[in-house]
Length: 179
Image 1 (cartoon, rainbow, N blue to C red):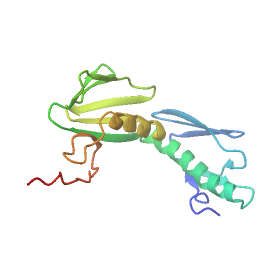
Image 2 (cartoon, helix red, strand yellow):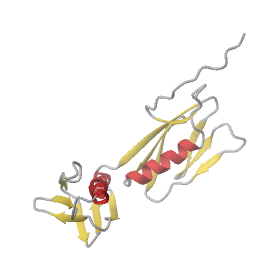
Image 3 (cartoon, rainbow, N blue to C red):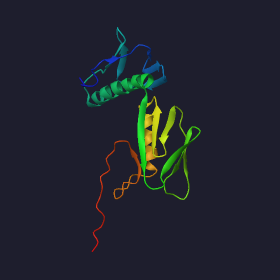
Image 4 (spheres, rainbow, N blue to C red):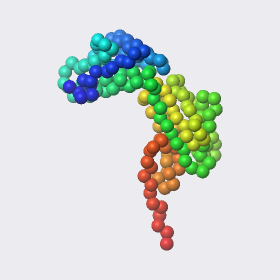
């Protein structure tokens, strides 16, 4: 058995899980998510609000899908109850962000401002001109949007200027040695 896949998933109070064939739908206080589980994997609802994920045999592919499917369903349940947040920091002279409605406008040293629109299910919070956070119920979408924002101006290894995740340590390089 997959060490992760064999663990039961606890469904907290206030979360409604519906299993229709291969489709798992989760509805909670923050919203609802659906996921279609890969072909050989089965999701079953047990007593006391527990979900179990099982696989038909021990083929290599099925073992991999077992742990993956269990984690994706568990992430959906966490998302609709508490949600996910990814914090970003901006460092550099003149680098800043400001909210324009539900969108973000970045000044990152280019000749033009960069406008990022919030995808469906994602909200942006600007705490200061150099700190922002991406919030949502879908873990994959939150991470993807945060990565796309970071990609606008990756942190420079020489001066550590750019957009980075909060708490990310940038490996610094020494500049060229002068005489």
